[in-house]
Length: 108
Image (cartoon, rainbow, N blue to C red):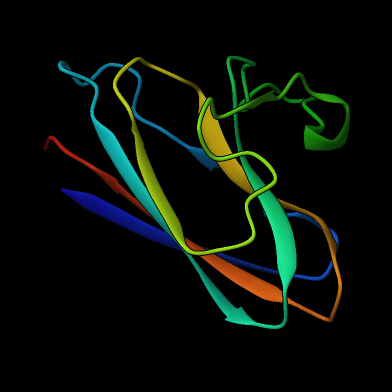
């Protein structure tokens, strides 16, 4: 099992966390904890090749997770289908805020 923790303070996105698309079954669980302030955040995934030499996450194609969009409280969820990478984006906040994303991918 692989565990990755990413943190974002204020508006913006974490670095993308590449997933192992070749593990079968593909199972990723995640949890987001607001550690300070009151940010509004979304979990996003991409099918882009994040390992391409000219890949830029800022111009990549990102899709919001179906149940964790514009969240303002601690949330959890999962991905049961392969994606290339996952990130946390803080959209806005009423206060300076920080959210922490923990990803756990089952497998080797």
